[in-house]
Structures are given as structure tokens and as C-alpha cells.
Amino acid sequence: MIRQDLSDPASAARPVYQVAAHWGMTDPAHASKVFRAAFGFTPSEHRRRALEGHAVH
Image (cartoon, rainbow, N blue to C red; front, top):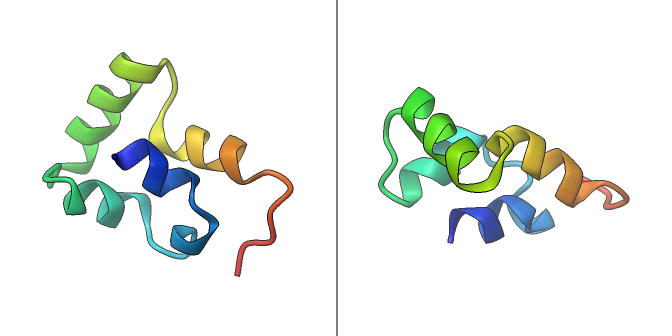
């Protein structure tokens, strides 16, 4: 699931749009809108919150 990939420190170097494209969401703006509608925040906000406290390389 896209949310899990965005939360994974091992995927932190991959841009959000690449993670979304992996899940079939090739339009970044649409992917962000759908994610926000489902979870209440953008994919970037989710990633930032999920990775707080993790070293991102």
C-alpha cells in the first residue's frame, strides 16, 4: 500500500511521485488529492510525520 511505502525509511530516498506511480497513480496532483481525501493529509505530510525520528539517507 502506498501509505506503508511512504512510511518505510528504506523508501525515503524515493520521491513521493515515484512511490505513487508504483501503485498506479501516475498523475502526482491526482495522487495527492486522492491520498488527502482518504487520509486527511498529503503524501508528503504523511511521510514527514512517519519518518520523524528516523535517519533518512
